[in-house]
Structure formats: structure tokens, C-alpha cells
Length: 578
Image (cartoon, rainbow, N blue to C red; front, side, top):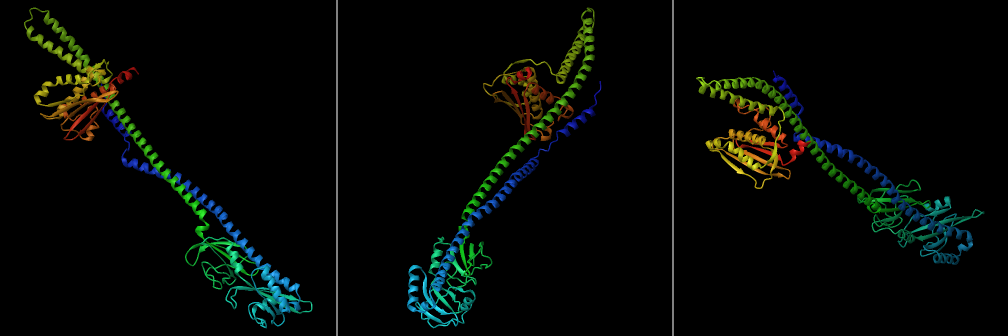
């Protein structure tokens, strides 16, 4: 019977290739990093897009809701200004049409009219009658001395001749307080014309602005088309000064603009143009005040986005750490399973080889045993055989050698296939002491220090005595071979858990490299060169696994080796029943 060892070697190489898994920490770190980048990107990007979209939608909606009241306030105040001015213009027009030229030329009548205006309506300062032909003031009542003054060369007179009505810009006058002039032309069918002119105190302008109820950091004022203040500004200047803010004169709608003022402050300007006179009402508010609601919402949106992003990152980091750890464990288990499969395949192959060898040896051994038995019988039943005392011991030696060969082949067959297991209740401590008894002479001869650190009240286990003896004997033999004379071996037992016990056999011998530790359970691998067979530890490994336990080795060169054997208390019976 022949075996192809090259084929076995090829199978070994194939299994080694299958079990090569890149399990280095760098690989898992890279996997963890890529998973985190991908998961964070897939979650944060849609969240960011949603946040940006919501940001702009809310901004547009809230700005409309915030800016609309500003426009309403500006329009309402503009209408108040226009109503005030149109009301005064209507009063002057009524006076020019209800009274004749002769009546208005009478100073007493004109004074009575001014008195009535001041009493019933606010703001009137004076009242005068001007000749529409040459521009001379014919009659005047008021605080100034203007009677006989000629206005023919002034620009407002020319404008009045063209339009029939006139609103002046604010001017200071003789008493240095701001007021405006209103003039109305009266034409008769005869071609004769006269002008009724009045000045009005602009204090009413300030009252209308105050009625807007602006905050302390707000401002409102009126400017003319040249940008000259017609009312005082709280922030930017006094009446008749130039406004530092550039306001467009185009259109008659209400406009809202955001900009920085000359002081670098962010402001929101709301302005609207009066139809007549050509004034512009300007409302200035701090941007932070106007958009306070938007800023609060924006802060809330940012806070929600930030908290959501942090939670996502925390979850992703923990999830990827767990997933990569499980992948790593799965890879390690798969690698372990491949190694176990590889080892079992080797044991199976060597077992088949051992079975063939055992059968091949058993056949000639049986013939030798029969012939030796026949020779023994012939010698014993031949009374006059002269060399009986000499040959009978030789024949018995042959029979004993055959029995020894039978034991060896029996062990080989046990390695090749599952031998019948005899279960009994065992005390592991006592079993170890019994095995040490087999080695007592060698231990004494080599002066080896064997230290027993056996756990008291160690639980008994159900297992096979003979096979456990072989396990402990093989490991102790290896330990004694690894140490020098006067070396030390420590045997320890302890309760591993509720289901099993553990045995540790530690020596202070030459130790092994990490590469050697990975190969010691492979059949025919030996570090004893020509003195070892490489079958002791593989057989030990097979026995421990067959008994439902596990075995591990820890070693360091020049420091020693430790074998840990874990044995179930009764798990083997369950495994056997299954």
C-alpha cells in the first residue's frame, strides 16, 4: 500500500491559501474609516441639503412676514403725511374760492381767517394775499413784516404760475424754526389772479413720526428729492442738513433695503415717496432688531442641525466600531475554522496512512506470533529438547515483542479512527498525581522540581481515564524534554467556569517561537529532529478535542512554555449523545 506525500503537501498548501485572511489592524482601521466616511456622507449630505432648503424657504417666508409690517408702517405714515398736507392745501384753496379779492385784501378779514385756522387746525403760522400779476404781497397777517414784499423773481412764484399750487421745502425763516409754505393761485374770468399763501409749522411732522412708536435704536425722517432733511434725524443729522444715506427717487412704491450705514452698522431701510410734495419718508431700523425673529429661528435651525449631526456621528462611530469588531471576530472565527478544518484533514490523512501501516504490520506480526507460539509449544512438549532453557526465553521475548507491536498498532488505529471511549467519574488532581508516578524515577534522576498547585475541592469530571493519562503524559514528556536538569515544572488546576475545569502545565525550558507554536499540533512536525516522530502533540490535540475540550499553548523563547487544557465536566456526554 503506497501513499503520495507530495499530494498531501499540495493539499496543505491549498488549505493554507484558503485560510490566508488579511486580519491586520491596519485593514480593519481602513475598513472602519471607509464605512464611517460613507455612512456619515450618506446621512449628513441629505440632512445638509434639507437644512439648506429649509433655511432658504424659512428665510424667504419669515423675511416677507417681517418686512411686510415695515412696509405697512411706512405706507400708513405716508398716508398720514399726505392727508395732513392735502388737508392744509384744501383749506387754502377753500379760502381762495370762498372769499373774494376785496375781502382778502381787508387785513381784519384776513386776520380773522388766520385766527380761525389756528383755532381749528394746527400748524398755521401766517396768511398773506399776493398779486398774481406782479408778485407783490398786498395783505399779510402773521409774526413777520412781509407786506409789500415782491416774490415775482423767486422760483416758487414761477412754479406756482405753472401748476396753480405750491408746496415748498422746509426752511427756517426769520425766527429760525422750520416750516413750509403753501400757496394757491385764484384765477377769475376777467384774467385777474391773486395768490393766497400760508406757512405751516413742521412740528406736526415730528408728531406723525413719533406716532410710529419706533424703538430706541430706530429712526424715521423726511427728506426732499435732493436728500435734504425736512425733519430732524435721531441718528444722521438735523433739519436742512444733507442725509448721508443714498435714497433712490425712482418709483412711488414702498421699498426695503438692507445695507450698512456710514457708521458701519447693519440697518434695514424702508422708504416711500409722497406723490406731492416730492418728499420721501425714510424709516431706519437696526438689522438685528428687524430680523430678530429670523435670527432666533436661524439659531434654532443651526442648533437642531448641529445636534442631529453630532448624534449621527456618534451613532455611526459606535455602529461601525461594532460592525467592524463583528467582522473581525467573524474573520478570526473563519480563520480558526479553516485551520481546524486543515488540521482535521491532516489528521484524517495521517490517520488513513497510519491505519494502512498498522494493517500492513499486523499481518506479518500475526504470522510471527503464530510461528512463535508453535515453536513454544514444540519446545514445551518435547521433554528431551536439550536447549529448552535457552530457546524458551528467546521465544517468549519474540511473543512479548509481538504484543508490544500490537499495542503500537492499536495506538495507530486509535489515531486513525475514533476508539471506543470508556467514561468514568474522575478526579483530575488524582489523575495528575498518578501520571507523575509513571515519571517519578526520571524526575528524581534529573532532579527536576515539580510544583503542584492543585485547586482544593476541584469538581470531578466525566471522561476517559486512559486517554487523559496519555494527554498529560505526552505534555509532561515534552516539558521534561524542553528543560535541563534541575529545571522546574508547575502543574496548576482550577475551576474554569461552571461547566469545566482547567489544567496548566508550565515549564521553564527553551520555549518556542510564535511560528513554531502555530505548527506544533500538525502531524509529523517536530523540533526534536531525528529523535521525534511529530505525532505526540497531534494525538494529544485529537484526544482533547474528542473528549469535548480544548487546548492552547503559550510560549516564549528562552523563557518556557505553558500548555492549558480545558476539560468539560459533563459536556462530553451531551456531545456523545448527539
